[in-house]
Structure formats: structure tokens, C-alpha cells
Image (cartoon, rainbow, N blue to C red):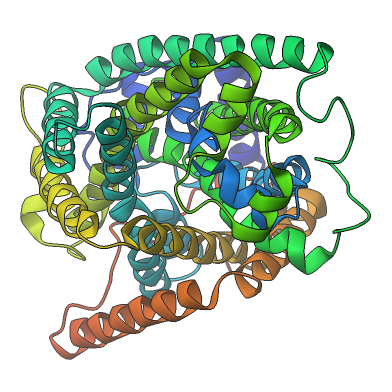
Length: 494
């Protein structure tokens, strides 16, 4: 045992003094029974930018009105609580990615941290997020572009976005990373313009003037009200977890992936709070927004118009369309294809989805399938009056439910299975994260709960079919548990 401990100490010291080379990172995957097939080229900065783009620094532009109305005007508070809730989840992700540094995210972590059948169900549930979210993003962006250019139908914009993103993703993760840097810079410029113009407008006496009402309003405050809005606001944070999907394409050590997730979440959360606070003070007709909601999704643009006029409203609307339809959906499609790839190589999805393009080192078939689903789903939902709201409820419920399983996997893997005594990271944090998310799920819309549990029921039926046909979920080299991921020596089995 002392030899094992010394070996682990030396490996940790080596990891601190120099970054892992390609052979070391490849071994991380191969010791779990997989071959290193994806291209390891991403740096810590690439991962951080990927997470920010996935969350979209200007994400509140598109759903500001819904969060404002749902929170009784305390939109900044809703985003702060949402960030705190997601931070506990990010910390749990950071622990599991160190234990199992591979693609698949919560599917891999729960499957190996708890049991393969649980991993399948977690992967199935989070498919509501990963498979449906590109379709939602394409639809929102296409509707926004149609409002700016009425002569071009929604379906044309939708098809154009799908084709463009598929081409970029098909040519490799490095191409995606380059595009991400450009798009992030553009989004931050637009956000800076809005904040400067908005603050100047408030200083000139426009809007309601500066106040703390977006953070706390005694006249409307109640915990169920605020947490109901949090269930909507967390849609803006979904995507930080997508960083873990790139574990097999990162050239960094595993712990850097967790740090990138936490960093992206903190940066995005700060931007969300600042922009929604300013916008809340500029809303031209707050009582009407509280009473009637924002069915057209224009509340943020109305606030921008009140601050700077029509040009600022148009700029923020255009930025939303491009950010959601191109930047965000680009990384969403990349993450979704990696989830399908991870499940397919374990024979829990059709095998053809595990095939890698030999030249570009990407899961090409999975990428094309996601594009086809997004196109079909977007076109169908565009024909429905409730298409955007229906997709939003499904996406949120799927992610929150999968995150609950993630927190359980941390406790099971580290405390129950490996006897960890790091109570803070391996027990307290996941338990608090679990309880917060459970409260959010309970206070979510009934429609989201019904549709989510129906999807879960379908997953249970699929699992039963697997067992009946002799294809019960199994993971490669499951017995080779990564003991070195814990911070203290693990007892050897008797």
C-alpha cells in the first residue's frame, strides 16, 4: 500500500510541475477500456470559452421577460440563486470528471459512480436537454431573424443555421474553438454597449432610476415565487456542464476541466446579474409586464429601446439571434454528438453513432444525426404556437433531473464506495446541491413535470427491453476504478 501511495504522490507532483502530454491523457481513457479516438487539442482557455459560449453571455436577452414576470420583478435575485444552485452542481461535476475523465458527462459519471443502469437512465433523461436544446436554439434565433427580416420565412433561417453549424462542427473541434473565440468577443461587445448606454440612461433619469428592487422587493417576495422563476432562469446557465463532454478532447489534466466549469459559471453568472439588473430598471411598463408576462419575448429589447432608442433594440435583438442560432447551437450540437458517441460505444445507442471521422477526429454520424433531429424538431415546433415554451420546459426538466443523479453519484463513488473522509466536497456540497435542485424541480411548471416523467417512463421501458434482449447496460473496464482521483489513500480490497 505504501508503494501505491508513493506512486500516486509522484504522479501528482509530476502533474503539478508539467502539463500532461498526449500519451498521458490518452492513458486516462484507455484504462477505462476505451481507445483514444478524439483529437486532444483544447486548452484551458478553449474550455472556458466553450462553456461561456454554451451558456451565452447575453442569454437573458431572450428570456428576460419571463424571468422578470415569474420572479415578481426580482430578476437579479433569481439569477443569483440560479448561479448558486448551479455552482454546487459544477463542484460535483469537478469531482466526477477527476474520477472518470471521459466523454459522456453525467451518463458516464452516474454509470460508473453508481451503476450502469442508472447511468443509462441519467443519459436518457439528459438527452431531453442535449438533443432538444439545439432545436430550441435554432427556433428562437430563426423567429428573431424573421422579425428583423420578415421577407425570409422562419424555416429558411432555421435550415441555414443548421447547415452552417453542422459544417463547422464536421471540420473538427479546433475549428469550433476558433469560431467560439470570435463569437464570444462579439457578444461581449454588444453587452458592453447595452450596459454603458443603460447606465447612462439611468443616470439621466430614464426608467425607474437606481434601486435594489431587482434584487429584493418586499411587496412581491416569496420563496416559491422566486424559485419558480429560478426554474426558468437556470436555462441561461445550462451549458457549463457541456465542458465535461470535451474531456477526451482536452490536453489539460482532468482537474482543469472542473476548474473551467466553475470559472465559466462564475463569469456568466456575474454578467447575467448585471445585465438583468440594469434592464429591470429600464422596463417601460413594469406593472403590465408583471400582470401579462412577455408572450412575444421582447421585454429586454423594449428596455433597450427605452435606454438608447430603436438602434439599441435592434442591435440586442440581432445579437440574440446570432448568439442563440449560431454560437450557442454550435457548441450544443458538438456536446450532444459527444453524448451520443459515449452512449453508442457502450452499445446503449445504435453503434453507427460511435464512428469517428478519421480525418477530422469527430463523431461524424452523431453530428449529422443531431443536425437532422434539430432541423425536423425546429420545423415542427415552428408550426406550433407553444413551440418555444414547450421545448424550454422539456430542456429544463431533463437537465435538472440528471443533475440530481450526478450529486448522488458523488456521494456513492467517493464516500460509500471509496471511504472518502473529505466531507465537504464529497458529502456536504452534493447534498446541498441535490436539495436545491429538488426544490427547483418541485416548483417547476406542471407541464414540465408531466412531460419529463413521461420521457423518463419511456427510458425505463427501453431499459427493460435491453434486459429482456440480453443487452443490459455495461461499461468497459468498470472494475478499473480511478482510485487516484481521491485526495486520500483508498483502502485496498480484502
